[in-house]
Length: 328
Ligand code: UT7
Image (cartoon, rainbow, N blue to C red; front, side):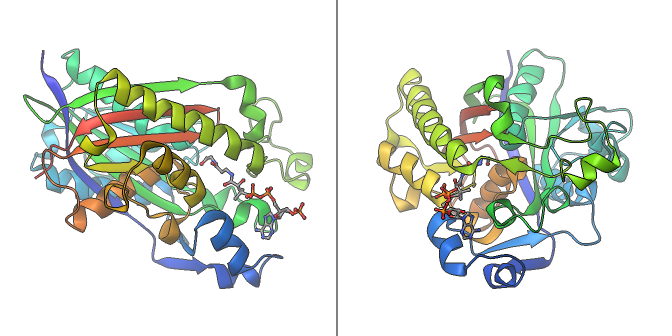
């Protein structure tokens, strides 16, 4: 059986930067509160670009770095909760068209901030089953389109961006293990209530702002810390890996305090942790590949490095992954 290996990574962020000081002029907040409670200073906002534009630019970088020809890509999967269109066509089909990838399997998945871990799980299964050889995965979000810019409890947290990776059949530097899970009973705590079949689009839905993201932040925070801490401890124990053996811990970037809590529990050093939340805020499914890309471009992530990923998000969904980086 061939192993699945993550052989390249890429990312793209829109050019417009929204600072905490900009937000001070929009809602009743302060730079001090945002930095203290979240660790966020800035986030990128897409003005004239949609989700598939961000995704296409990230995917192109990952594709170029993979050294593969476009014709070798068998499947393109996009994780997003801010797709170009509500129902169809999928964002993945649009990205495939933008990249001139003809006749590939293309579809979207919805796992909120855990999207990239779910993508890895699917791509690994496709490759190990022998059904695909090279899978392009993309986490891409335009969260600015589902944010109520008058709600200070959410508008300071999120940003736009995309990250991509190529997963290929290889003999070494494999994806070692992935764990994904969910608890739908807590779905109401992080939700966009409107425009689905429960509350179809209507003037009332817009008036009540049900088309925007609603989050019980404090409750989500507590479950995220507990769940993520247990998940990363479990995956390391299961694979008999000590935390000091991990070269890079690349967590979902929602809140610096959540990252710090997991980091302390595992005794990770600053050198082991990749933190980008200060620059980009929470970019949901894009946050892990964006952080991985930053580590790669700065020279912190090298071929053969052992990486631990974790994520938690709406659904609830969560997951973790252990892999050796296969990129050059
Ligand atoms: O990625 C998907 C998963 N998402 C997450 O993991 C996010 C999890 N949640 C969080 O990161 C944090 O809960 C938040 C950053 C959202 C909020 O931090 P918190 O420490 O849990 O604050 P809180 O919600 O308990 O609110 C504390 C106070 C409240 O005021 P009172 O009631 O104490 O007077 C809020 O109204 O802070 C107030 N507040 C703000 N003040 C200034 C809430 N948002 C703001 C704001 N600026 N932007």
